[in-house]
Length: 375
Image: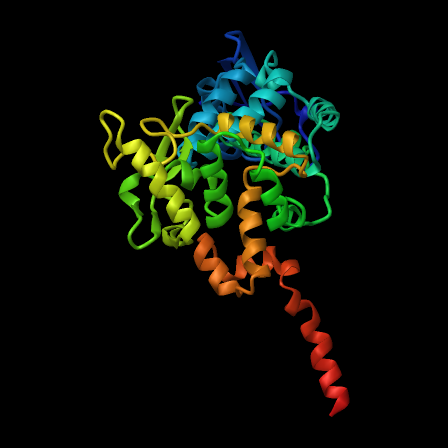
């Protein structure tokens, strides 16, 4: 052990500190350096301090302090991928590839300072993103920096400087349900101008079943019972790792369900089945909407927007068909339990999301108070 006692007593401290250690080491850039410690009161204190320093230096040797941010970013993505569904991972990666990586791509990890994080955050705010999306991106960056503090000893003080902005709480799903739907009359105005028979059947299917687009796209003829007038939802179309799509299990356990078909929709599906079954190589394993290959979301969206423009009805998203079906059921007098079972959601979520559509619930409190006053 290279521990020494200071020979010059004038350098001893007033409380008797006179022991120190001196050693040589190689820094992260390969340079040979000498380390001489501060003074310690006891010899064994200096020895313990030297041991701690050598352990610290050894850990430095195992960490590449010259590593690029992009390299760590890719490493973190691989780590993150283990815990996410591919659809979620795809959205995360796509968002960060666009809004994080370009800014820090040429940085060394350890050259990133607090001001770099704050400048990036301000630049992010200039993008055409809602506050919730910005906070989500910041949250992922915080996770990445935490990963760096654990695995690369990146400064935790710097990583803590990056904070989300406070955003008033709101339920986007509820807000969307207030505008993203068609009334029955609006749907009739829209469907009358759809001149493609296949598209017309898809729009009717979505509007009168309330299934998710991914559930419709994954549906095959094995799960359609035209005699009992029902369909079984057990498949779901999701983004695949190769960039395409794949069929997976439904979104939640509640999503696995039977959905009854009305007579008009049953007749439409019978017509479609008769047409499809005449094709060479047909089998019940084929997709109801798409035959060998499922209907592509981009194709569906492009056709939908075309007919919306032609018909002049208000613009809705693909998911708006689901909101439209719920609105229709509620206006026809269905209660929240019936709606929840049909669309594969919980009663609590239906009542929370579509509360504004249940007219009897709005007036119930006033009716109770009026009845009380009369008594």
